[in-house]
Length: 251
Image 1 (cartoon, rainbow, N blue to C red):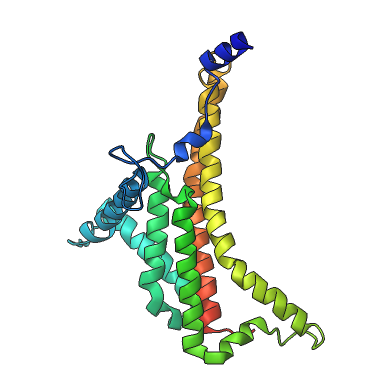
Image 2 (image 1 turned 45 degrees about the vertical axis):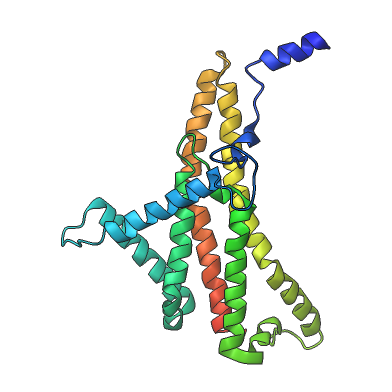
């Protein structure tokens, strides 16, 4: 048993793909709610990157835009059109909030693809507050805009009368499940992709299969780049759909 344990400990195949998600204090010591951690650091980098992209790169707007200005303008137009198409003109006033959500998530996702970085959106401690903020904002807005009429969201008037109470219960449950699915979808997809890459990287140490592992890592990294954008897009478009429900609750 001792020999097997020693061999296992010395093997290059002993790796822990989930270790990359461990929250660690930046300056050592014990963890507390105020302790700066690797999560704090990369959240700060995300904010800096957003300010650099949306503020600094557009501060001197030119007729022929720079690359950074072009990216900022594309992001602006993309989110604006999405919000307008889903919510109508009435939803455009909430553009700053939706744009902020998209830019934060997509920036944090892409920063997490940098080797040795920390992917903040892989943690429920980040995605759950984002989802809860959307849920509470939409719910409060729904009642402010429509009063008790917001409850018509749960009453499917087009269904047969006998089925409406049952459907109302189902709609109510699905409404309160929204922040759960909204947060888990983002964190789960980001975490899974990074864990798979780490597994392939562990096998790259074995000379016989290292070429296959390198190819697999390259393919997964390309997929993760796509997932980084898609998950930000999905989170944002669902926010727009929920916002539409608050503005126009009638089925």
